[in-house]
Length: 552
Image (tube, rainbow, N blue to C red; front, side, top):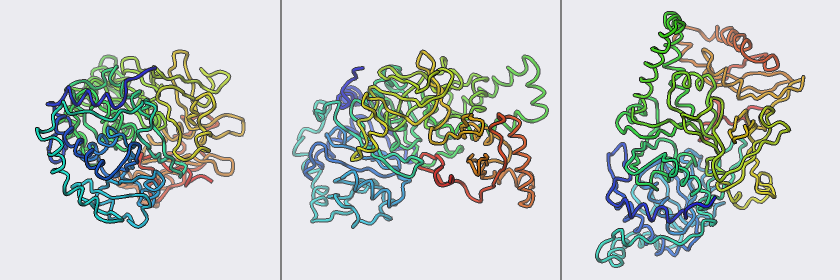
């Protein structure tokens, strides 16, 4: 599939939408128009040029979502440089490793993060700039950066004596096959790889969002997922800015209270969401309500159940701002029980599937066509297949190829060849089935799949999804110990306190949970023991549990 040139998309958008609001900071209320954004981008281009940065130079970006974060990202790619976004939750050692491995010549970083980074350990960096106020934080040789920063406005005025207007927008000529971003994954295997995404990969995602009108001119978006992650970047930033949307950056941890308040104020036309948010709302607000004796009786009465469900649906829609077309869930599988309930009440949601290596989208279906249990249809311009003799019924590894598939891992041929075969198929490592129309049904990761004594494939994620909905369970991990299935559980201590369950009664309480769980799983999925964990599981910045730390 041929897509538009990635850089030309934004050149066109900034010209056509010059006077429209582009970015707002939720906390401060500050708003930039597309014109304001274009002027700042032009100033950053002057800075890059003064510092002698050439086309293809790497610029690292590490900080919490902010107006400056977006401006640096867009200035880098439109200048012709390669952006290296780094999740702010990474530890200082990982941040340093990524900056060095990517060969970044410039680092933009939040002040609170910079405090913990050793400047002497940065090998290639010509300078470090604060994301908070754009001042020079560090330069290893001389004061070229400080001088360039100090004289920036004077030089800019000399270059544009009549002021900078939409007619002055002329961005780098970049072939769509050039790498524009290196995104370092934070997988659960403990090793971080730099995914090389080309203009074509990112344009494939953006053009799909434009063609399906996920965002549109003057629509509203609330960005609360990390923009350094491919999912938030593509659909909370790149796609809306390509069409003239107004993006509000939440800029703080999206706790349910903060998020619901912001959604009510911004009233976005599309909500990009991870499963955890919907699962928390279901478990903490909906499940206790529908589990009460009187409510269970009411829901068993024909006609009354539809009335109750419609009331819950309206309450949920209002909580998300009330003016959205749909909620798109991605980043991880959605709990099946939660999904079934949302589908039953006709809540407008859909589940997509992707990975950083596809920038990120692989499959998606609009909510009215969504099939529960699926992860949507394979995108136009993408192909999918399942490595199975019976791909409709017997799970196998999902493979994809096409417009969105990465160029490879930066400076890591071995890792690239392990996932990209000679025919261009990306081996995702995810297990699932596929219907003839390209709809994908995920089962779990191939690396986590277990084999029972009777030869049955066991997907721990499916058992964990059921266990996580049980009373007194906050999160869980199913592992194999001595040939038997064991569940590691971090208890829901708030629920234990609420029901006055002491630590002495924790073990028998979890034993009852185990017995109830075994009533709803297959015989070969029976859990033999629950082991309580004293602390939450260690997680990646994407909030995925680092399984490798708990399996042996």
